[in-house]
Each structure stands twice: as C-alpha cells, then as structure tokens.
Image (tube, rainbow, N blue to C red):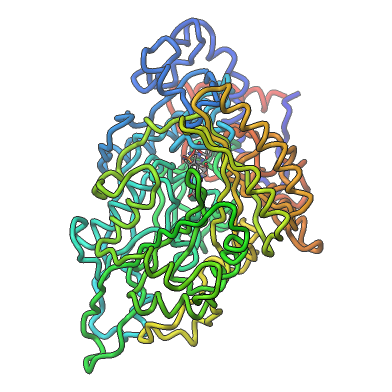
Length: 632
Ligand SMILES: Cc1cc2nc3c(=O)[nH]c(=O)nc-3n(C[C@H](O)[C@H](O)[C@H](O)COP(=O)(O)OP(=O)(O)OC[C@H]3O[C@@H](n4cnc5c(N)ncnc54)[C@H](O)[C@@H]3O)c2cc1C
C-alpha cells in the first residue's frame, strides 16, 4: 500500500507536492545508482559538478576547515553556490547572488531527492564546528557576500527629536559576508567617506568584536558587540531575510521572510534560535543604527545639520588581582548611559575595560559621573579621562578595539578574512542576571592563564542590559546628557527566540592554544571551572552561539534562567517552527535548538511548491506514481 493517504482537507496543491516528494523518495535510490553519480564517492549528478569541491579536489583540505582548529571534520563533499575567493574580499554582484540563491534551491532539491543531509556554512566560527559535519554535505555560502547599503535621504521636516532614532539607511548583506565587511561597507556607503571624519548621519551595524565572524551564525544566534546597549542585538535590526526551505514537501522553495508576513514564525525564530536549525538563509536586510545618536543643544534652526565630532574610545587597564575594580565594573557598566557598551577583557597580564561612547566627550564624562564614577571609586574618573580619547573616525575606533589589529592599521583591515588567526579555541559562557560575588571573581582571577606563546585561558564581561532607564517617549536627543533607552533589554522577551533580555552581562571563558596539547590542558581547566562556576552563578543560562557539546540538551540556552512559568515557551515554539520548515532535519546541526516529537497542534509545512521543477523525467515519475495510486 502506498504509505500516505489523501485526507479530505488536503488541498490539491498539497497532494501534488506530496506526491512529487514521495516520488523523489521512491526513486532516490535508483537516482544514486553508479551511472547517476560522478565517482566512487557516490555524489549524485543532480549537483552541479562545477560547484562541487570533493575530497579529491586540492581545495578540499582548506575549505573543510572550521575556524577553530579543534574541529577536524570531513564532510561528504562541499558545494559552493557561488565560488568564494576564500581569503580575499571580492564581493559578489547582484547576478551572482541571484544565481547563488537558485543554486541553493537546486542543491536542496538534489539533497532531498538523494537523502543526503547537509549543513550550511557562513563564517565557520561555530564553537563546536557545527557548520562542517562528518559525512554530510556542506553548503559553503562564503561566496555570497554582496553588501549593499542605501542611505536614507534625511527628510527636510525631521525634528531634532526624531533625528537620533531616524534610520540612516538599510543594508542588504549576503550570508557569506563577515561582520567586519558588513560594518565597514555599511559605514562607508552611508557616510561616503570611511577614511575621514565625516560620520554625520553614517550608519552602522552593532556587530560583534571580531571582524571575521560570519553574518549568518552571528545574526541567527543573536549577535552582540560594541554597540549592543544602544543598537540592540544584530538580529533586532533585521527588516527581512531571504531563505530556502531545507526539507519537507516544499524543500528547495525560496521565500522572503518579514516580521508580519506569511513566515512570521521564522522571523521570530531567526532572532536567537540559532543557525542551522530552520532554513538556509541567503540574504539579510538590516536597519542601520545611527553612529551619532545625539543632537547637540538646539540651534535656532531646528533642522540644521548636526555636527558630530567623533566617538570616544576607552581602553582602561586594570590590575587583574584588583577584585574591587572588577566588582565595581559590573555595576558601573550596567548603570552607565546606553551609548556605551563596555567590555572587561583580560589582556595578557592585566584586565582592560574597553568601549566606544557614541557621543561627545562632555556627555561621556557626564555619563561616568551619573554611573557613580568618582575619584574614590575603584575605577576613577581621572583614570577614564586618561585612558579615553576622541576618535574622529568611528570605523577606526572599531578597528583599534578588535584586538587582532593595532592602532597602525587603517579600517580597511576589517574586510580581511583573518584566517591566519585560526587557533585551537573554545568558548563557554553564562548570562548574568545579577552581579557575581567576590568568591566568583576570585575563581575567575585564579583561572587566568597566559604564556608568551599566546596560549591563554581568559574571561570577559560583555555588557548587555541596564542604563539610566529612559523611556522612549521621554527621550530627547537634543539633550546630549540624556541616555537613550536600552535597545537590547527593552525588547519584549517573547517577541524573539532569545529568552534572556534581562541579562546584565555575558560572562565568557575562552581557552586558546597554539597546539592541540597546549590547548587541551587549558580546555580541561576551563571545563572543570565552568561546572564549579555553574553552582555559584544564578540561572545557569548560556549563549547558543557558544554552542557547548559538553553540556547535554538545550536547556542551557532556552530554559535555564527563565521564569518557571515560562520555561517551555521558547523550547516548544522553536521545536514547532523547526518541525514546520525542517521536519526531516535535512538541514543538520550538532546540537539542534529544539528536537521534540511531533505535536498534533503543529502547523502544516508550507506547500506552495515554488522550488519544484517539472522536468520531463519528473513528469514521467509523477505520472507513474499517480497511476500506481489510482491502481491501488
Ligand atoms: C573569534 C570569535 C569571536 C566571536 N565574537 C562574537 C561576538 O563578539 N559576539 C557574538 O555575539 N558572538 C561572537 N562569537 C560567536 C559567534 O557568534 C558564533 O560562533 C557564530 O555562530 C559564528 O557564525 P559563523 O557564521 O561564523 O559560523 P558558522 O560555523 O558558519 O555557522 C554557525 C551556525 O549557523 C549555521 N549557518 C551558517 N550559515 C547559515 C545559513 N546561511 N543559513 C542557516 N544557517 C546557517 C551553521 O550551520 C552553524 O550551525 C565569536 C566567535 C568567535 C570564534
């Protein structure tokens, strides 16, 4: 008997699509017969040969590598929808992007027909190496890296109050682009002059701190960095994205996802639910944030151009054994104006408070005082004064703080791939819902290890929440001393797939080594300390983008740290979205966000069949199966 039946409410189109999918399934084994494959690796001929990088190909050795040297995975093969230049930034053009999207649709159809599971890859930085998995096909999207920003024309009648929240433009970012490339090009194309001080009305993306991270993984998992408290998570700036459905009756169908469109559940899941779970994204569109979110005291002319004099860059060194300074940092970095997102990182033998204040010097000094900094506090006002400076060029300030460059580098270094920085590394993290106590600070201080070969075990406190608490309705950017609302924590937690909007900081542990042996030692120390720290840190919640295979399950990301009454909200909703678009799990992941058994209340998968091509052979197979159905 044919193993599916036609229910009374099944639409005609659903029946057609289902029949086609079933036909594919029936015939998949015959399609992958020796005649239909390229070689001994049994790669089906429905993949375009020119875009394949098979294990025999000399490029395979490099292309299979994850950013962390810890992961030596061997994919079944690699397929590039658009050839990547690998280490140089050669942006794709519109035609290449269109071709790439169509190619991904074909690859997915071929994979479904041949029952070959696949992963998607953007920057390859996943903490567990999830974008290149043993024995699976890797869809390497690095060549799909077109970035195109459009500056908004400032309306003539815009009021000074509106201006700071007025969007400087939007940017389309192909999934293969890195964070550094996206930031650099957005800023360059909206300011027109990346090399000088003209940052009036320039737009930026609140990307993470290292420029090499891929935009797909970063965005889909959330994405925090230098500007999170003012700009929100990167995913909070999503306007729309394009994607291809990876499995089920509409496998290969290209869709456009918007907040209130037909795929609003996917839009919800794309902000924090993590890459490699729902659909293969091809292109993002983001709303840019203003680099100068303030207006100076009003002039006579309400619409006169705002003079933006640059940003303030902070690099304040702190002795690592200074427990009081670390404790004080936790409070002041939470209380301070949201135009600065401070980070405490360990830099060799000392700690360093870093950040970029998106505003003038006077406002920065005032924000420190308002956050309780004075000459008697462990981090002093004069300390900040000496260790901060105005940087006229915003992109330069970002470049200086990336940690992989030095101040002699010009901002165009942001577009590099930084593949030379590959090392053995692994991160672990906790979202902090309250300041950690002196005992935990001491445990962190004891953990720090550093040697002159750059083997290290360090910690980092990345700010997220807090601020003086201004309501958007009361915010007046003409008052340069007033803090804007916090755009990370003011998002309703249930509005996106990221549950931890009440986090104050993300506490990270980072083990990095030059060789496996050196790194393994540090890794063991980190794993051991993580479980000791977990007993002391409230909530025990972690960042999905720091995927951690040494902790089973997904409670760590979507359940821990959440109010008891809401604990199943994210897990259930994510699981339902995954079943709807990726029910067969063809798009694979090492630690899927949310595998749960089917639920009778599950929404039906989309069925408009956009990706299916009615070739002669498909029509033949279709007719064959239809006849068999009728016959039965
Ligand atoms: C050096 C370094 C610095 C970091 N700094 C920060 C930081 O400042 N802020 C921050 O928030 N995070 C940071 N991270 C963590 C980072 O956000 C995650 O590792 C992220 O998942 C990396 O994204 P990627 O695209 O580079 O990785 P990949 O390994 O390519 O992808 C990550 C996941 O997304 C999936 N995926 C890839 N492409 C697609 C696609 N087109 N469609 C659907 N799924 C896809 C993959 O299959 C995989 O599951 C950092 C990581 C590293 C290694």
